[in-house]
Length: 346
Image (cartoon, rainbow, N blue to C red; front, side, top):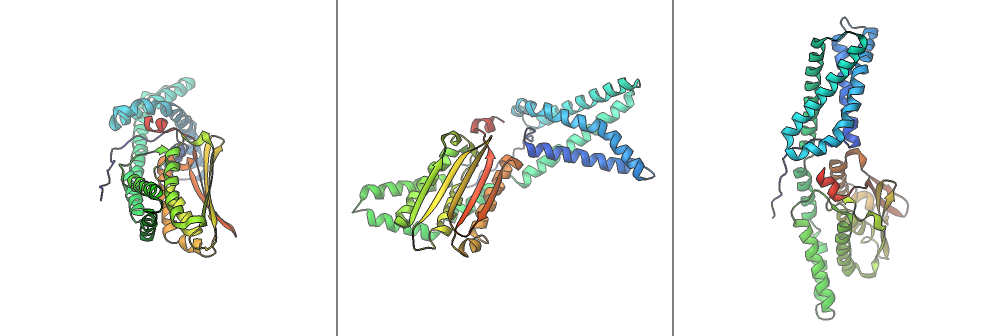
């Protein structure tokens, strides 16, 4: 079995990401509240509120200015490496804090350099805490762990899928050799995609091509029972997605929506622009009880895996939702319309 490449190299958080910005604001305000509790001695509600309001007058502008500055700067310092980037972020934070403190002290007519030094130390410690938090978070949701789960999921392709596919191919070897050859090529491409070196992102067009290969194999097995309806707009094909984000969901749609029933069914795959986001929806027939049971095992595993990798790449800017009606079951993914080269450069 191919070893899973590890990517333990740390990187700066994406300060342009909405989820990162919200976490930084939350951590900064939490520190402000805790500092107010520690400094308001003896503690009274009035003294604590006074400390918090006074601190917010400095902290909030600094936090907002920091996010505005660090968003473009991060792309410039990232190529230098993680630790030079940390030093650059610390220097920027200290410069913004000292500059704002000096400006406000000048307005009050009382510039105290001891106070500026104290603010510099506080912001340095706070920045170090924030960067360490994001470092630990990236380790907790590390690509190595996610990719290990993904490959464990993909490596256990259902035996009956493989055996039935090979049986179907063998039945075509003499009667339709060209079709049998194409089916074997599709099967080889599918396994090649599962075992290839990990990539951080791929084009949605590549994911769709892989799904079509997979569905051609399933059509060979299931015949007229499986119908596929593709509704994909051209303007979403260059969107960046995690690798193998669609195939497990399409596999679930076939396994839990088509196979259990004797009559024909349709798997619909839609992808279109939704403002500045890409919306992808996979819908399959709902077989009463089957999808619900699957949600406790393989289906749930695939959904959790895809959801985790979307969060790893896009944080709160991407989401995965499921919906079941009396006749259909659908999985909906919404993610930013970002190109692959933009993510790799960032």
